[in-house]
Length: 60
Image (cartoon, rainbow, N blue to C red):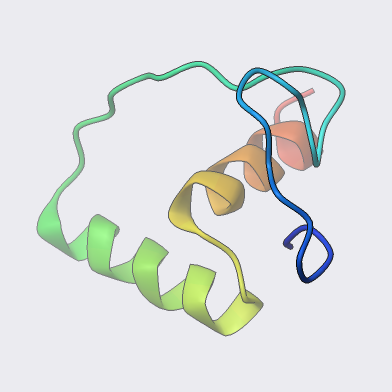
């Protein structure tokens, strides 16, 4: 997911969701991190967006 080509993102203005993201920290094994990197790459997402998508779709 990305903004339209040429569209500049503005700080504190939500683009993909209805709220601004906050910085958080997670601790995972190297295997889990590599699996997330691989999955995110295949889906055309950042790891942050992969986690966001998983949490929004599977943790409600």
